[in-house]
Image (tube, rainbow over all chains, first blue to last red; front, side, top):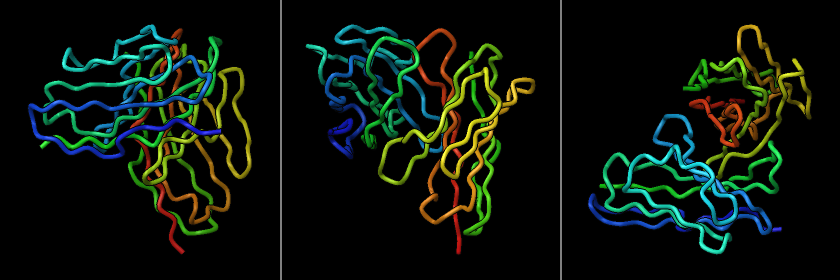
Amino acid sequence: EAGVTQFPSHSVIEKGQTVTLRCDPISGHDNLYWYRRVMGKEIKFLLHFVKESKQDESGMPNNRFLAERTGGTYSTLKVQPAELEDSGVYFCASSQGFVTYNEQFFGPGTRLTVL
Amino acid sequence: GESVGLHLPTLSVQEGDNSIINCAYSNSASDYFIWYKQESGKGPQFIIDIRSNMDKRQGQRVTVLLNKTVKHLSLQIAATQPGDSAVYFCAVLSYNTDKLIFGTGTRLQVFP
């Protein structure tokens, strides 16, 4: 069974540009999460989808970040316009079911560098 | 808000020795704790978990200890091997939510 996949693995963009990250969760997983790790710091929660609905977006830094999960399958996270402080590794995770706690399986991450 | 802290950013151990990685959390109502291992180029991978109704749980070569009195969590790795080299994160399930609160990570370096 395929794990969580993320695309691209690396992205280097200039300040002011737009970048879209994609996450494909494990098939059948209703829960999808986005996290971010800025260099040397903790992994921080960004938001949580249940199917196509945003369950919790309390970790989204500001309105330059837009996450979508149309159809409840894959998700995209768009940063527009990107700023230097957006650099970091963006992780996606998925889990099944609605009972807390179901193990969250993480993807390999997308390393975003904003110059 | 809730927070999780790790005591050491880096831990160096000799192959075959035991490793202990420590973590502290802030919310006494937290009831689920997880240790993750992150190898270079990969995402965090589940190692072991523990609920607040336990104070110790063992896996294969790993043991997690939970001290709720002082809000402290530790991961013990027995007979550390080169393949254990990675960044280790403790995480707490935020109370009444489904989101994980992570610590900053401890890089474990194993030398021969």
